[in-house]
Structure formats: structure tokens, C-alpha cells
Image 1 (cartoon, rainbow, N blue to C red):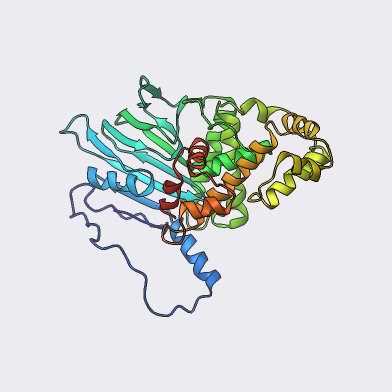
Image 2: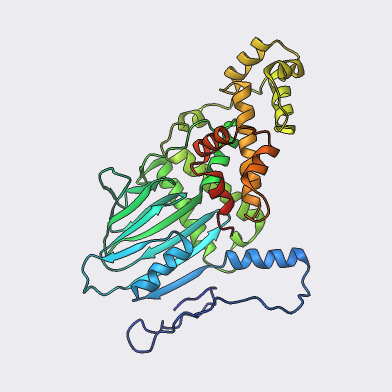
Length: 374
């Protein structure tokens, strides 16, 4: 039985002990009323956000029902019981906090799960038991109560053995949200894909602290009246979860994040950056940027290498890619075309644009445009 909001009551789930017939899912998805709403657009938007973030609970012995819950809230999947005669005793609690999905998941039977590319960063934190898993063609790793599993967005994923006694806390993080947070912390575009180390020590140190933060957020988000329902808290807690993961997990940028904050960029570099951010679609040349900055070309290039970590032209490329990405995510496939958006932001060579976009975001521009919006 699924309970979408916490009521303070805990009825016995039907079908759990075989005492009553389990209710079936509706064949048709619920539709919104066609009557005129008396709510303002702001109230309507708030209601839709509340619906999207409403916690979900399910206790079930039906493997298909459990698989469907994972698909609806996390990823498409295929599930196989490792002992076909085993009885499932699944319990699931899922909640959302902005671009983060949090779930306490337990199947109660040994099983194997297969996914395609996840499209998001993901961390599985065993609270009990263990889980063997792998991505791509590497050998399986073992997630335990002392070591979490950290998954990359762009690799096929297999949970080779989810033990029956394994109860875990699953954390799904939107790829763009985590990478944008990293760029904000670095104050520079991310030049390489963010590769998180596949295992994270959660027995001590930053890893353990991050797990406590996740547990607190998940517990509060599962209630209907928690502070995570308040935007002032939700925004900051969401940011804390992202920053915490970037500081707790191993990746190529971690040392840079741990360094003292760099001094402000020199005025010439800032002037060039401000110009590019204000009009990334403009066909800036290095000479034009140097003139805007009020310095020579060589000094401008040296300043960018020293204080930004890339050349002015590379910075312009990243700024344009970011604008294209933002617009593609904000539009529906019928509203715009990839070619039009790319051209609007200064890309004139379709092939080079597509290659640069895929290198930065791990997917094609058309994939971003067709992604399902929450």
C-alpha cells in the first residue's frame, strides 16, 4: 500500500500478511480537473511543486510493484530474484529535495538489478547488509555500511547482488545541478567531466558527516510538515548536500576546493569575463577582448591562464555551452530546435558544437531537449 503523505496513522498494509487483497494501481493516471481554478499562478505553481515533492511510501511483496516504484522515482530497471522461490518483503520511502531524490529502500530478498546509463550522479549508502555492483566493464565492487557506492551518470549499471538484509539510503543528484555547483565553487567552468571515485569511506571524516546530513534531510523530507518544505530551508539544505558530496567524495577537483579561496581576479580579466557573460553570442576575438580589458593580448592570455585556468576563447566556449544548455532544458521539443538555439548563442559549426556539448554534458543536445521535465 502506498501512503503519499504522512497522516500520523499507521494502518496495516493490505496484502502484506496475506490477510486482505492488495489494492491494484489505477490503469489511468490521475488527471487534473478541467474546472476553472480560483488559485493565482503563484499558488498554482506552489501546489504543483508540493505535488512533485510529496513523499512516497510503499510496503509490498510484489516484485513488479517494487520495480515500478524504482522506475518512477529513480531509473528504468530490470530485476531478477536470485532465488526464484524467495518471498519479497519490500519497504520503500522516497522523497525529493529540489534536484535530489532520497530513498530508503529494502527488498528483503537477494536480487539482481540492471540499469542503462543513469543520467545522474548517484550514491547508495547501505544502512545494513551489503551490495555488490559495477558500472561498465570493471570488476564488481562491494558497498557496505563503511563504504558507499558512488555511480557515474554515463555508464551502464548493474547491482550484481543486493542482499536480502541490505537496507540502503539512495541519493540521486541531477548531473547539471552538481556540476553547476562545482563551477560556482571554483568560479570557473569545469573543463573535464566530473569523475567521482566509485567508493566513498563513510565510516569516518567527511564521508560520515555527509551521510548524517543526508539522513537528516531524508527524515525531514519524509514528513509533510518538516522544515524542508520551507523554501528558505530547502534551498540551503539542497546546496549543502551538493557541496558536502563534492568535499567528501574523491574527484580531480577536490584538492582545488580544499585550497584557500583565491584572491579576486584582476580588473582586466574581470572586464573581459563580464563582457563575455553579458553577450556570449557575440563573435569576440582575443584582440577585441584585450581592448575591452584595457591590456595587450599576451597579458590578457596570461591573466586568464593564471586566474581562470583556461584561455579567453575557451572561457567563451564554456559560457556559450552553458547558455545553450540552460535554454534546451527550459524548452519543450516542439518549441525550439537544437540548431536554432546553438546559432542564437554564437555556434556556427554544428558538428564542432555537438562534440563540445557532449564532452561537457555527457549527452547530445537533442537528448537534453527531449528530457522529461519534473
